[in-house]
Length: 286
Length: 244
Image 1 (spheres, each protein chain N blue to C red):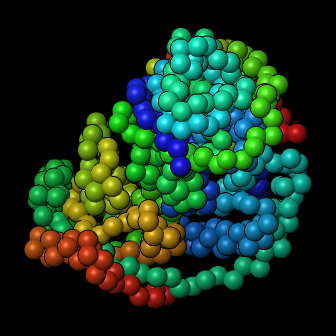
Image 2: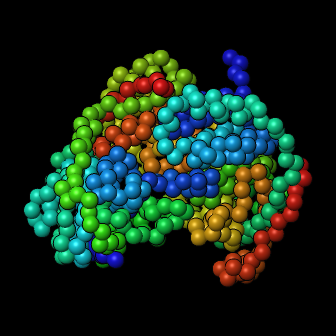
Image 3: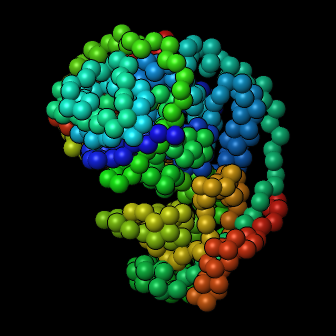
């Protein structure tokens, strides 16, 4: 078993996989990687199965020291990754030698970057998932002094030059694919027009649970009888605030659900930072 | 506008929403839970998870649904052919609550605002048999219906940053127990020494949608004793079959 020591934890880093399934009925959030596309690409490059756990890194990257040789991949946001202070690229298979240090620099594009490792991280599996979530797993975020464990299988990698042709366009676009939510039709035509024709800015309140938008949508809708919600549900509060629920969201809610992001919409949203503009593009069910 | 219930429609590309008549009613809950059970059996191959709230079901797929129309049709077929046999009994759990002033920090406020004595508040809160509609808000948080109208009170204008684990509260016409320490806006009237969520047991919750709950008042001394028994895993939660 290999170990990674955390020299610097970065802003907010967590171990995630594709999420917790079948425990929502007990009020347990789904969790899992915010950007499922980048995380899957990480595992693909390494020849891992897609459900292997990865490290989700937010905006400001950690500084990590690998105590054993392994292979890694970095996908998603562009945070100027470096190995032993030499710049390395996203979306490539990267060889790590014993004692190598991985660090990140300036944020160029996007919000969340994923670190994949050969064989996946070894972490406690609770309710069928490795995803860290306060109150469910013992760990909540990466912190100094913590060590991360990983598999050190001696298997021959199928391709030392593996890389994936990855479309990074989604890190730049502002359109967010969304379907009409269950209460969309209760909106006035002026509200419907505003929500699909005007841009909204990402508010400072944005995390794995929800991303709030700055501009208000004047609202006179009454709360609904508490109903089910899921990642991608866009709620409208009585004060007119739009709240985009993300992977760590609660399972039920009482605010009108005006939009429901597609999986692509969630992935695009996951890469936005405070101040970024988004524009909802209403799509029809195929 | 008259709508046909249940109403079945996609909610994005990973879920199908089924809305029943939008009311809070314990008889409707039985129908909702019956459909839930049928869907869980019928869709077992599809790797879905079905959750209920008061008057809705949500079927969540673990993947993006390729052909949503086919999926909706399959669910409709399932609902239409369902042979509903109404389950007329459920489990009734007896839950101990200490209504000591130390725990029930809002008892005074409710007493003054509602002009009801504290012993009367306790009597009104322990009398009903509450229905567990669903779990949500926090892991293990039970949405209980059946609160006495006289105890209906609005939430705190500014939520408390810290409500203790086990706190029993009232928010509008609902009552419930905080399964862990968290921020919260309900008026707090007592505390239960039981664990309502244990991540290390499967299932993590004992009390489930459709079950019934009745509270009984305990002294501080009993509270501490039960707390110890719970920690040593010796406490036996009293339950019985409930008809109706």
